[in-house]
Image (cartoon, rainbow, N blue to C red):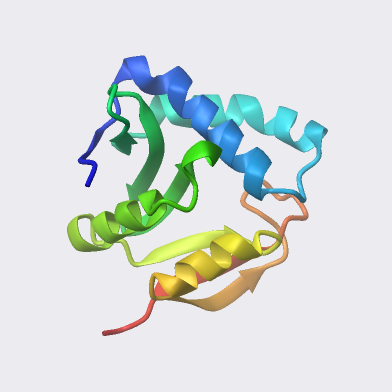
Length: 147
C-alpha cells in the first residue's frame, strides 16, 4: 500500500495537474469558463495550504492529494488515471484516523463524490444553495456518522 506523506514545494505543479484531471473527470457541471475562473484560486490554495497529504507512484510522483483543516476535509483529488483504485479511500481513512477529520463539503452536482463519502461513513446534515465563492453550485454538508 502506498505511503502517505506531505507535499513538497516541488510538487505544486503536479498537484495542479491532479486537480485539473480530477475536476474534468468528475465535475461535469462546470463549464470551461468555470474551470478557468477556478485556476488562479486553486493555484493559490495549493501554494498556501499546508500540509497537503499525498500518495505517490513508484517514481515518487504524486497521484492523489488531500488537505484537512480543523477536522474538515477541504480538498481531495485523485488523478483520473488512478481513480477507482482506492487512493481516495486510503486518504480519507488517514484523515479520519490521524487528522480527526469529521466533516466534508461536496458539490451536489457530483453524485459520485457524495456516494463515495457516504460509503466512507459520512452523512448529509445540511445543504447550501451556493458554494463558498457565492456561485450557484449547491453544496451538501456531510459529517462522519457516530460509531
